[in-house]
Image 1 (cartoon, rainbow, N blue to C red):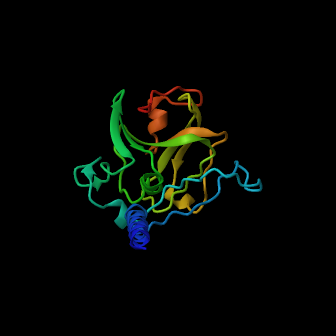
Image 2: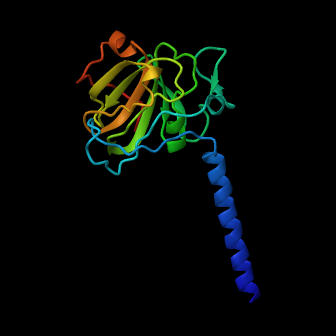
Length: 198
């Protein structure tokens, strides 16, 4: 009987610990809206791919962190699922977890030159993005698993929210950069990028 109680108590502690971790990694204030991913026409049936939408409140986006961008603006880069790599003179902030991807570039008052946030998804899919809580326009670059650009949405304005953008084909990566960066780099559909991914 005592052994059963010990096992039950241990299980309760494990469940409580898992709940605590869930609260820490997915805070209640997160403003993610899980919109099912669909093709470019809204009348199609939603697929089961997760639609990752760049969103978070400004207060969440400015929590403790290592500096990225201007000296006056601090951002999270040392949290799980988020790291920095420089390739060919471009600083990539790579986000790999749903929590980091949900936050995206939300709440940032500027996006530096030669910078891109790289959304690295676990598999190809039709991922949807919106401009919730964005303060500046962006270029969104949709990239296949081979590193080839499938599409570019240039100068996407914050006012497009609550509209959701989707790639024309399943993709593996999405780059968010400051508006005009893709054109300045000479990127176009078919350009193959060297990305800091394994």
